[in-house]
Length: 79
Image 1 (cartoon, rainbow, N blue to C red):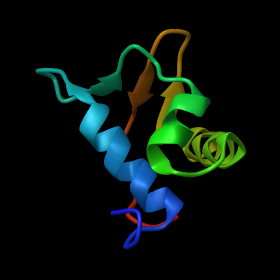
Image 2: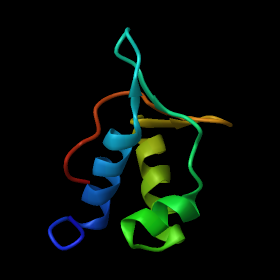
Image 3: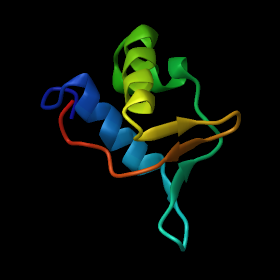
């Protein structure tokens, strides 16, 4: 997927893969991975992961809590 998707597309795939779905439909990722770990898995810089996750937080798609990430609504395919 690294050759076919941009960094955002790879991030969406990773978040969808790591997300745990609750019976009520809420999705979260626990434990919260570090930006460096995510960057290593995506093949990009930590700064890029920080920028994208911050944009997702501002857009209301991702909520960063101390120990987990909560995916508050479905992530857009393109950013």
